[in-house]
Image (tube, rainbow, N blue to C red; front, top):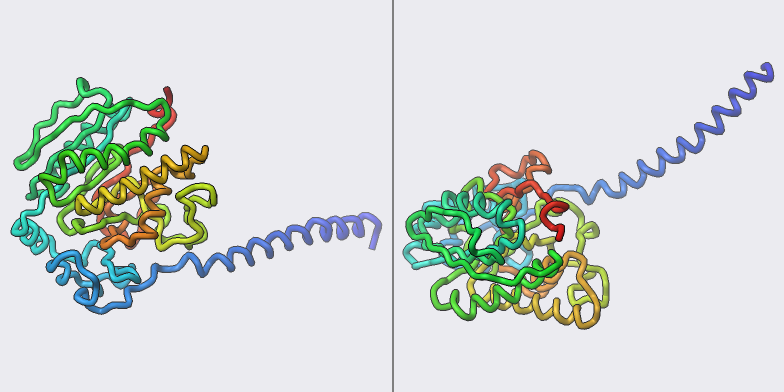
Length: 337
């Protein structure tokens, strides 16, 4: 073998060994992660009557109708997916029970112009249709409210709020506002409360099957991930600190009876204020505190990601319908001073 051929062989070995080692390392790491990216756990209960139910109509839930997803939690709460419930039975039951819903939404700064009209108009076609609903719109610019023609059994109250300099403070301080409005008004008129982010649009039924005592939502970006990838607050100095949890919940939608929502919002606000006194800010602000609260106080009802889906994720086999969709985010434009 000539000198040049020997040099070529040596160079090939020098190049191939590190490449092979890199490929082996990443393949082995991927294989270690692979078991975590599996289908959701299955419900261990055969019949809904075995769960701890919010109301009698929950006994009609078909837990086995969706064998591709988890339809109940370990603490016997249902996880609501398309195909598990009969909409007509739920609507008739809640109408007979006199259920009524207060919807809170914050439209502060540029968020009012960008999102509020679409949110309100779409909700009239899809949110709790057939039940009395009052919108509580919190804004720093009541004079800029869009002209909305309300559907039957719909009313609206517009409440002026202070606009904070930082969007993080707007997000966190909404908890105090929710507590105050429940205590002063909502508790006297409504059985249930739902709290929404405004940068969303309703695309399908978001109905009475979602009503319960304490209602949480599975975050669309986390429901198939292993727990070690959940973005809980890992700072021990924060009141939102968590080592582990059950699920990762999305603060864009939460609800329940007025008593339960008031308790959640009050606890989150107290945690936020304690953090402020200690010069700490939770990783995802009010959402971090919400996850901590729901870890300690299990929700009685969990909504699947159908109830708040991000279209940028693309299609998923287990998402058969989309009921509420994320609107395109414009953070740089909307959150700038």
